[in-house]
Amino acid sequence: MPQGGASSERVLILAPHGRDAEIASHLLMEAGSPTCICLDLEHLRLELEKGAAFVVVTEEAIAESDLSHLSSWVKDQPSWSDMPIVLLTGHGESPDRVARASRYQDVLGNVTYLERPFHPTTLISVARSAIRSRRRQYEARASFERYILLARELQHRTKNLLTVIQSLASATLPAGPARDDYFARLHALAKAQDLLLEGDGRGASMGHLVEQALETFGAHVSINGPQVFLGATMAQGFALVLHELATNAAKHGALTSPQGTIAVSWSLEEGPPSTLNFRWRERGGPPASPPKRKGFGTKLLEIAVASGDAPPRFNYSAEGFDYEVRTPIDSVDAIP
Image 1 (tube, rainbow, N blue to C red):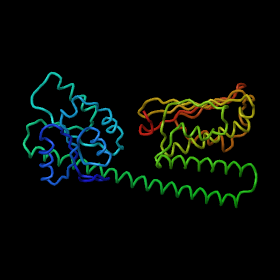
Image 2: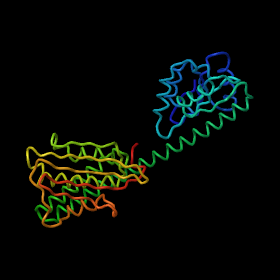
Image 3: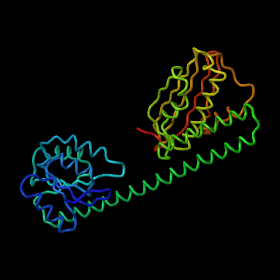
Image 4: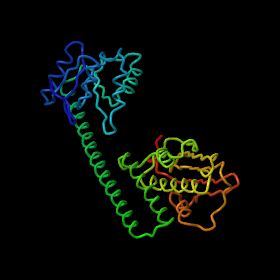
C-alpha cells in the first residue's frame, strides 16, 4: 500500500459497493497515480492524516453516514490546504438532489462532482486537475514556511539588537530615574517581541498584550474586549502605551491605593478601514491632575498608536485618570 507523506500524490478511494473502487484504482494507476482503497469512512480519515493528493468517494458511501469526523478533518486543515474531493454521483435527477449537493459542499469543502457513467478519460482529466491543485497547495505551504523562518530570524535579530542597545545605554546613561524609565521601556519592547515570536512575527492579539502588561496587578484590573489581532508595528506601539499607563498608575495613579482599580476595554468598528477604540480607566486612587510638564511618556501616549486625524483623549478628574484612543487598523489585523 502506498504511503502518505508531507507532499503525497497518492489518491484515496472510498467506494465500498461493487467494482467502483477496483476500476477507479486501475484507471488512476495506469495514469501514474498511486492509490489507496479505503474500507470505510474511519479508514479514509486515518489515511487523510497520513497525506494524500486528493480523494475519490462514491455518493452511496456517504449518503446515509455520519460525516462529523470527516467534516471535522476538512475544517481543521491547515490554512494552505484545501483537499480536493471527487464525488462520484448517480445518473439522473431526484427531488432532493440539490439539498444533498449543498450538504456535501458544506461537509467536504472542495468538491468536484462526476456523474456516472463516465468515460475513463474524464476521470483521468479530473484527477490531473486535482493533482495540479494539490501541488500548488504544497508550493503555498513551502512559501509560508519560508516566510515563518525568515520572520523568526528577523525577530531573533531584533531581540539581539535590543540587547546591544541596552548594553550601550547601561555603559552610557548616568544612574537615575531617566535611565530606569529607559530600561523599563526597552524591557516592554522585548516582552512584545516575545509575543510577536509566538505569532510567527505577524503580530499579537490585543488581549495578550494587555494581560502581559498588567499581569502583576491581579484583582486590581478588569479587562474586556473582543478578539483582535494587531500587526507587528501596532502591537509594539500598544505594548509601549500599556507599559507607560501601567507605570504611571503604579507611581501616581490608582495603583498607589489598595482600593484602586483599572478597567481596560476596547471595541472594534468595522471598516474599511476598521477602527480600534481603546480605553484605560482608573478609579479608587488619588485625584488625577495634568502633569506640570510634558515628558517623554506623555508624548509617547500621544503618538505611539494614534492617527493624525484622531489624537488621544486625556481626562484628569477627581475620580481618576482616563485615556482613550481611536486608531485605524488594517482589515487583516482584525479577527472576526
